[in-house]
Every structure is written in structure tokens, then in C-alpha cells.
Length: 384
Image (cartoon, rainbow, N blue to C red; front, top):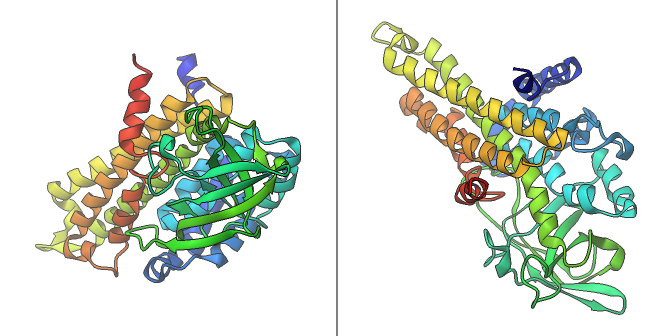
């Protein structure tokens, strides 16, 4: 029993911050969600709001101007925001994803240059790993970096990159030793968006999370100093995998928030909608749907929070647990949002109601930061 009791706790101050974020999400973010989706517009106003409320400081330690409140509190915040708007939740998620390589592997100088300005909300980062021919397989990476006159010159095109055109800098992964294999031949670099040779390429027109720009950053002979290397030369694969072991918990939290938001909306709707002279939540067919939806949310939350607590404690098996949390929560989000549409019937299929948006937003959580097929491989390899 003592081991189970140690899985996670939510301190009072974290619960209070959660309640504040929940109120902000309900009152300030939810009313903007449909417009953000319809116009595919990045919500600069909501990013400023998150910054003003210290929410963008959640991924950072106090020494760099952050809250120092840890992974569990961060992902509680992602969950609460995603209940209202998945695109807005992604602002906080990328704040972690794009800075984790620096936080985990960066030199003291890199940390001091970049982390405080992200913690304050002044700067926004991006994480540039995937390419047109290298999604789940980093070994297919074509972006190259070569040393010239004491600097690194980076050439290549990335793909599916969140925050494209918004980010002030990109953590870019490039092949520096083509003969070494992906585990030793890739290096991570910080590339500021104002460096010559960097440009914003094609932006994708997406099914969901339409308020977050995604697309192709292009690097044409972009030069960065040796000080911009994250970690050691040749350790880029390790940097990327260690980052994703932690950051995919944000995807799990986003998925959970979408699922809980859809469940809450469907339950409220079922209390008000009347058919055959009574609320539809009096019919067992609807009751069972809602019961299964709520159960899947609760189960996903326990797995997610346990995985977050393992990161905060520094447990060695965080990769397995983050993969399980991401897998379960994202699959649950798809099941739950499909059922939410069904509860609303025809109204669930029209844009005036939010569950269709939640369904569209849920799908990407099964794909990005490692498809669920990859997560199953990660989990399975721990069982050999």
C-alpha cells in the first residue's frame, strides 16, 4: 500500500493553480475555440494570456524564471486548457517540447540565453526533427550540417513542424557524420529564426488543431556558432529520444483534455435534450455511453499522472510509462469523441456544436510525437 500511495500527490498549491487555469480556460479560452478552428488562426491573444498568468513558465525551473512546479503540474495545465481548445493547449506543449533539449542537454550558456526568455513568454520555440522522408524513422534524415570556418552550416528541409513561423528559434536535428548511423551521426542545434538562410516553407491545411501552424522550415546554408550545439556532437539521437520520452506526456494530457471536454459536453447535452418526453440521459443506451466515456477518462488520468510523477521522481522507466500514457489517452480520446458525436446525433455533426471539432483534434494525438504504432513498439521492447 505504501508503494501505491507514493505514485503521485497533488499539493494544495497545485490544485489551486489547476482551479485557476480551469476558470481561465472556461471563461477566456473556450469562447474563442470555434473561431480559432474556423479561421485556422494562431491565437496570439491567448498566448499573451498564458504568459501573463505564468502558465508559460510551467515547463521551467525557478533558476530560469519558471515556476519549478514539475511535470505533473505542467500536464494538469495542458489537460485543463485542452478541454476548452486543443490548439491553445499546444502553445504550452510546444513551450516544453522546444526547450527540453536545452534543459536536458544544453550548456549553461545555452540555458541562460534561451530558457528565461521562454519562461517569461517573450520567446516561443520549435522542435524540428521530422522530415518529408523521415517521420517515424530518424535514420532517413536528409538534413546535413557541416563545419566551415569554426561554425556549422545547416542545409535541409523539415516537415510537420509545430509553431512554424511563430517560433523565435528551432531546435534542429541534422546529420553530421553520415557514416556513423543515426544513433551516433546526428547532432542537435539551436537555430534562431532571424539567421540568414532560414525561411518558412509550406504550411499544412489540417483536419484538426487548426489554430497551430504546422509545416516546413527550410534551412539553406544557415550558419550557427559551435556554441549552438545542444549536448555533444553526434548525440542528437539521444537528445531527441530523451526529449520525446518526456514531452509525449503533453500529448497524453492534450488527448485526455479533449476526451474529458467531450464527455462533459455530451453529459450536459444529454441532461437538456429531450426525446419521447424525457431527457435522453434517462435512456440506458445513452447512460452506458456516458459511463464508458467517463471511465476511459478516469483511467487515462491515473496512468498519465503516474507517468508524470515518475518523471518528477527521476525513475528509470519513464519511456515505457510515457508511451503507455500517450497510447492509452490518445486512443481513448478517439473513442470518446466518436461517442460524443453519437450522443448529440445530428447536432454532433454540425459546426455549431464543439464535439465535431474535438473529434478532429483528437486524431492527431494518435500520430504526432511518435505514432501509436511506435508507442506499442517502445512498450513491447521493455517486456522482452
